Length: 251
Length: 332
Image (cartoon, rainbow over all chains, first blue to last red; front, top):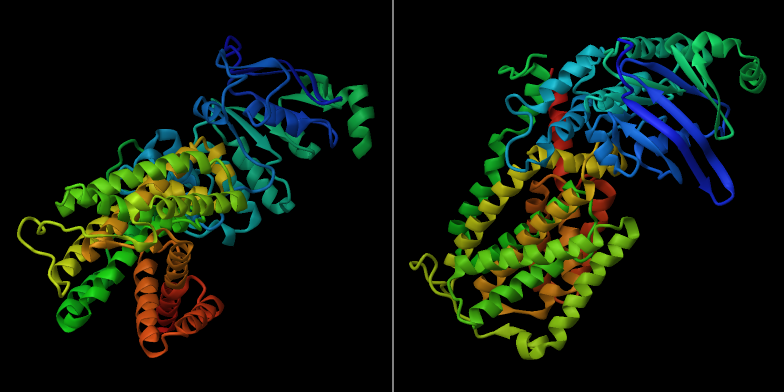
């Protein structure tokens, strides 16, 4: 499958807030099925980069192509519609609704059903059928009808991922998917991520080196808003600069 | 998950069941019809209650389902009331088409103001809803040549309903007309809130930023429901004009916006039936307190509100729901 072109290609992304440069000439390329991690110390600009990619923050310069279409100036909604989807570091699910209702909202947005104000929700062949399938695949079938605020935190993180999957992403940005979760629960989350379809290109942003090296084939290291290095996971782990500037800090 | 599956999963079916009609939903309508026969002397109050229920219901769509807190919902009630009155004075005296015209015009007012103010959130939005209503109130006050100003708008007549039923002195026609309009509007409201669009509003109410990240056109959805709510409030206002043959400046007042908010909170927000319970109780207390202690009825209303806020989370409907759950749980 080497012949596949990039699904997401960011070139020369820059972002400054006044004199402060938070993104400096960042290149990033994801191919279908990629398992890519973005690491870097606190304040390295990881979240800024995610915000630029998803359209929350406009870059000062540079370009982003999704399936060869320029989306640098596209709205969040347009990017989501084209398959660029993210999850959030802190749960941002709909707390008062059940897990099934949560994921149904995502599926209905993708299919366009959510604009329908006249037919009955949860009827035959509804978005909820597909949503339930996603919950089932993530092992959440038994929790489908419980309000998500009553679920253990680790399960809530899975609902967060299910919401993203409901949008049928081509590129999925996972922002610290296991943040704040006990190690027992994080195993379940990692297995769920590993089981995701290989059609999806995944970019994971995380601090947890065990998680990163278990998951990622390629790694981009970000330091002070710029790419320090990008390469195969093993090469990155062996790199002297990375060990000094980043891994060393945590050792 | 097969495409086009005809048998939904039990969990999906369970969600669908939450939306199906329950027997208890017939209760308010049975009571309303019964009241027509039992209290023939109170039909004028009865129509006013039905009209206010419709007005409160329209606020529930906006506030309860979409989470837009409005302190100026009377703007639309008033526009509807004046539209119906002015149309009648201009010779458009057929009531049902007049009602529809008022609903359409108020819908446009809701669309236009929603387009401007729904870009904002929180307190700014709250103040802007207040401002829109205050401006319309002042326009109606100053344009006395058209609206009658503080004297109100009177001297309008309407042709018999469907060409058959005259608006009689006892308010029989007015009551049944109001009940029929309320029923139609309720069916529309219930259909909207149980639709995928209605569910997406619940998502926006819970977490607008997340809905944006799911690719939902959040502002557009809010403007849509605001327009529907405005139109429904306008129909309520028009109904008041047609059944009382009079428009008071009060229909646009802040007092009116406040009262409808209180009625909704009293009954329970985001439940449709909260509008029925809250409005009926508020207006019956108001009516009886005003008869016995004409100067102090606000005092009793104040107590009612304090008690309901302190002890009835989710309004009176919320109390009812918790009681029902407790009974269900208590059974061995």
